[in-house]
Amino acid sequence: MKKLLSVTIVEAVIIIWLSFMVFTQLLGIEFSKKEILQNCQPETIKYDDSDPYEPYCVWLYKTSGFLDNEYYLWVALKKDPTGYGYGIWYLDQYVDYDDNLKDLKIVWNSDSLDVYQYGTDTKISIPAQEFTSRR
Image 1: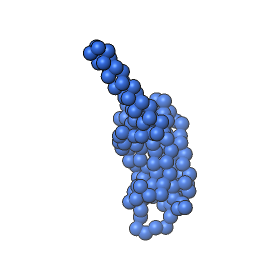
Image 2: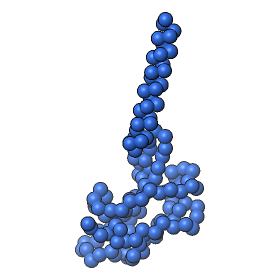
Image 3: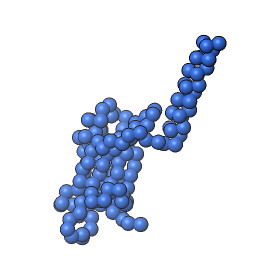
Image 4: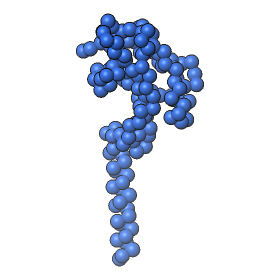
């Protein structure tokens, strides 16, 4: 009887744990968010006539859940990174370590922001109007 009860308890714990994992994965719950990279526009690139100069920045975050790690690019004003901005999931098949992403090539242009994928010349181009326009 005791052996049967202990097996049942172990099975119940495993089922609860697996259910929790599936539930958090389906809801997209993140357990950690780590900043991998921050790169701000140079003063030579201006998107508006604001004075004083207020740069936009791009951040690369790594979010971790139970079953996966994902990377997210976010572009917004440096002074208000949680305000209006533009974000995309960053998918890169060549990334083995987070340190590889610290050296991403980022090019700020007067009409766009170009992010080159690690180890390739493939670029993600984000039009400036996507992160500078207020709704």
